[in-house]
Length: 173
Picture 1 (cartoon, rainbow, N blue to C red):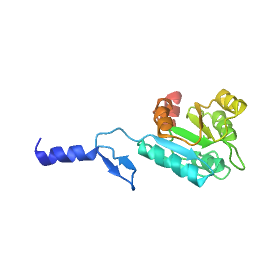
Picture 2 (cartoon, rainbow, N blue to C red; picture 1 turned 60 degrees about the vertical axis):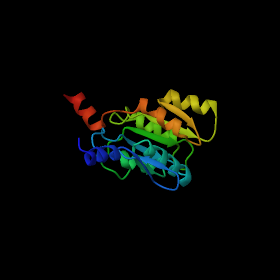
Picture 3 (cartoon, helix red, strand yellow; picture 1 turned 120 degrees about the horizontal axis):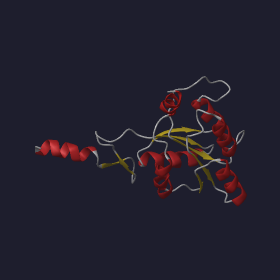
């Protein structure tokens, strides 16, 4: 390999800076496709922190400010039709107006198309009965805010590796 090509290959996977002190990994050409996370939080600050940590960890992120908006994106909302959005995981705040993260979790687990998508609940309140109820309903994790990079890195084990459309077509075959 000649030196310019070697330099090009090395620079494709190096960290770059995305702000004053925030490096961001740029995927190399041969990297696997990004896993897609739907982040749901009514707090702009918490949503931005979640989004930045997930992107830093090389996830594709769609961030919304309500459970109802998340349901719309997933094709379960009042005004939505079936959507083509493929999501590998949903991370949602517990305490939100109109519909809580727990209510969102229950709606997803009732859907035959979406029940296999892993859901992680985050909250600033450490309430054992709330945590137990979410885990019993099917949440993969219950994390306390503020969300940390170590939390996000640990979530990879729960990621749904294939999209919901290929899963449903395999069941029909």
